[in-house]
Length: 372
Image (cartoon, rainbow, N blue to C red):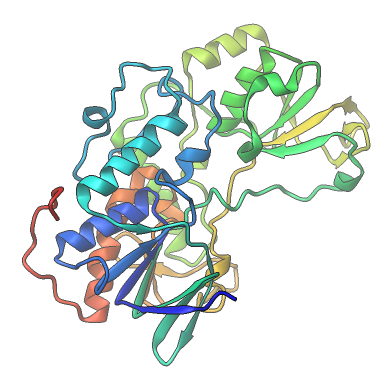
């Protein structure tokens, strides 16, 4: 029999991806100590956040962008000259070095099953340990909660239905007709790879928007602001990527030349052998690959998270990380901070605001080094 162990602290960070590590960095910078003041829990067996699960063909040359963690440059830490290095190897190595350099000890693997409130304290329940805290910074992101929309006939399909999360290599689809669903960056990347080894049909809910020119920091901040506006009203967030558009890369130009980017509207139903549109047109298929995004992984917070009528969460604070109806809870993988564009700043804001809510005064701010 496994005995439950109780561990009491002031703040618990759930998740050690970019937002979680950023929050931990700033709590330390404000003078808090890991253990008595805060702890960080992570479900994964090793450092790297969601990056460790990315498909092998996603390399440093094809990834959209890797944002630095606060206080430590990715390019100065990891050799980025070898562009064909897998992102799922390079980025977790960077995260691992970051945790060691910054003295951030992560409890892993610890899967948080649910969080509940009792006598003004939060109890964070995992399979083996029960933690308690006065405040929570949730940084679980979205990777563990893939979204596949419901469509009539889905249960009758005789082929495979996969999600972006399931993709490993395009060679797995040789000799099969693949319907690629989605208009995000991942959909385009996978469509490019798969279309080089087999036949494909590209389907999107809305006509895709392609963006000419570079996607600079200002464009990124503007995209984050659009998502932030929604969560401050208690509406369900849109993904940051959904408002940025698709960059016209060399790969996109090549796909146009190959005729791969012939887009079809969403089908009306799924049949046993493929899909069918409202006008009766059918397409036989062996695989439907849903690149339909992810939703925030918040099921473990259901007992304590107040929802609005529209299904969203009313968010406030400087960068919309604070749950307005319970400011002891901060979400740094939700809405505008679900993207790495806003994760670092969100971690900093959540750390300072939560300390203020709990009445924890920052000790003299100090730099963080390997000796911390």
